[in-house]
Length: 229
Image (tube, rainbow, N blue to C red; front, top):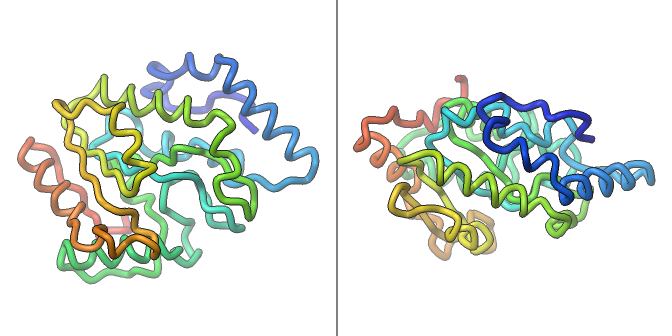
């Protein structure tokens, strides 16, 4: 589990206090106890804070909020909606790629579900819950992670300007009150899940709208379809 706070200084300078609060101790204890019982937790300990390691605070241009990690073996690696290389893209990511292809009028290798290239360009891929029990979605949604990730969202909103927050689905949209809409762009639509994608996710054009906003504020656009960065 979390033996030390191994995060870039750009993050630690802003959120180190959270790691000394009681709720974080409770999360640590619960996960440690579960592992002692042989319960499998995703993602691996080294990947729990992967989003923070790949996207340093000063690089953030976009935040894409997910819910909790994928709960099947080999899928979760600490980035919302992303899976490691050579793992087939899950249904929500397949729909994200469908919208990306149409929105950006681009063809790309949609068999690669690893979104590291987005993260390295400043797309902070944050799940609001950072761990999950194998085979049990939302199993860690009420253990305290929301206190941490709510604070992270507030820190981004308060300490940066002109960030695009992409909120897919009701759960992500419930965090809207944490974001200063006068400083940032908030893009909302239905979730890309097969259960809801046809209710407003398809056709929402989040990728082109994000790049238009970045360009209009003299910021470098995201190369959404370049997965080799």
